[in-house]
Length: 75
Image (spheres, rainbow, N blue to C red):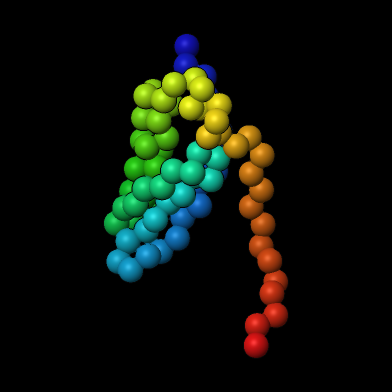
């Protein structure tokens, strides 16, 4: 039985597509739509867990990632 790992996906529009970032693994992917970028990032994360050694997973996996908004004075 496979273990489920919950990860964060941050997506942003870039030119005519979308970039998806997983900060826990420092992995990124892209797609023409939000859903395509999200699915491509899921595949990249799955491939990482399938191919990386346990030592590499332990080194790269950040277990505490916090996403928040900031208000910054500009000008």
